[in-house]
Length: 119
Image (cartoon, rainbow, N blue to C red; front, top):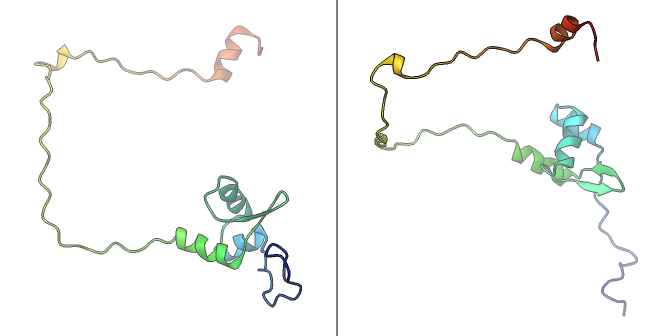
């Protein structure tokens, strides 16, 4: 008898084919960078061989399912009643509210020329 942890000497099941990120990107119609970035952030399924990302056919099918957008189906729902708004005190006149106009800061290049140094 062989131990349960030892692999069978003649297994009929072939290991799954591993695809490169470039192959997956070509199928999905996106960049290899997108595929690697999503795998790095663990947003899509992948297999890691050493430091390289690899994908099986099952991974590819799941990525497609994850990013699939289904059309919205119209449902018969009663019209939502607006939620009552909490009463907030409003200023009695427009001049009572302090209004300050925001100004953009001058660009950094413009400020450097003023003083004669770029440090």
